[in-house]
Length: 219
Image (tube, rainbow, N blue to C red; front, side):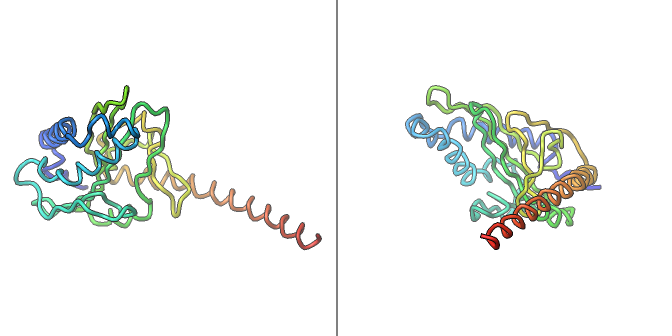
């Protein structure tokens, strides 16, 4: 059983989300002119602002050793320790509600399974939902949630490497109070279905290129 860190207690989590919301809502970086050039620019700018200012939004006395600079392919956009010795990596995901559909990648199933072998590690998704109607950035909602609080009803696994956990449709996100054990067992259930399907696909591809080989050998 993984005990919730103080930062994830409802009161502290609410304060953090409110502070982050106010940070972005009042940011001069998200000017109309920049957003009008490209709606996607709003998401990129929001990620930059959060990386630079996130530590200032955490309730006092809960954060240590903050870093907001990571390579693009890293597991985290920011990371820190809390004062109880837990280690958080935070993946920022921005979603323009004006888009009809998108499937943001969260993390590799293999990378997460190794990371969660340590109960003091937490992989958290910082989900920023916004609109750019009429070329103006309008912040809608900010959620700061460990990945195990995302219901599997709104997640899927994509065929990349060992498998990539994705939000199936960013317009439909369901958060629930799962235990880590329950959620990880549900991940294993999902992979029990996913991997055999991938094996069947690979079998068909092998047969396809056996036929291609025969064609070129006989040509």
